[in-house]
Image (cartoon, rainbow, N blue to C red; front, top):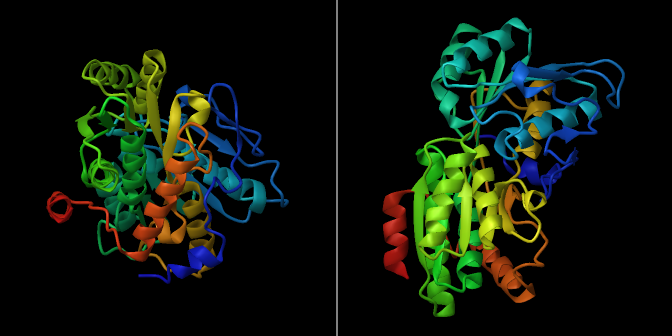
Length: 366
């Protein structure tokens, strides 16, 4: 396990570090190179950086949500764009339309002579393990999964997403007027369970802390790229009485936010500050600073400061997850209470659950 304190020392702070401007469509622009048409299946940026000539070549493979998912993949690409802009590195991405594309895209990234290949998402764990074994001279990184093998050329980067999910669950319960909140998730997995259980535990903690009786319902969409399904699930939750819905579902979550806007209720975003998608609708977001982690880990791996074969886990105490500073929709009192909850998580007085067993124990302790 590497020295995680280095992330704090190197400026691993809240907010999108070096975040690129977002165009009206949500595509990343103004970063010394923009993604090509996503329908082409790939994109690159090799010109216009702060330094002349690239010193390293890094490529990323998206999950099935695509590079413009307004969430997980998009913020990962933002991190690579920062490396291109600030360091002059050559960067590119390959989009996976379906899971069968993972192997093909990882092989293509190797053929492209990338020195470091990022796999965005836990679903690529098996494919990354096999690619790393077949290509021992190439460094691989995977987001939201530990090193799936003992390969010395894979670095796993994980986030304690249950911590930020706990905080937004607390906020949702405090803001709800109907006493019912919802949670729409992507594909069922251990990572998604962090979001689900963290959120539900945050609601439960608010109930105790504030004397409330807010109920929470959750549903998996089993997709990260189906906005229509996200919308239909949300509509049902609205009919059940939910007036705040948290989504952690990539591109599917865009449909959740749109449905919340149409229904006149609050949505809660994930991964990046998604308030730009629907001003006045997105109450807050459970941030996951994937872009900052990619920048930091990429630099350390390719400089030799960090060796492959390690696993890195980041949370609130590292500034790697949290909530945006804007509290205009929730009000100052709720925001300050949420920051107090963050403090209790950082100190270890609250340990948000990431597994079903831990969730049951947490609820029993209230």
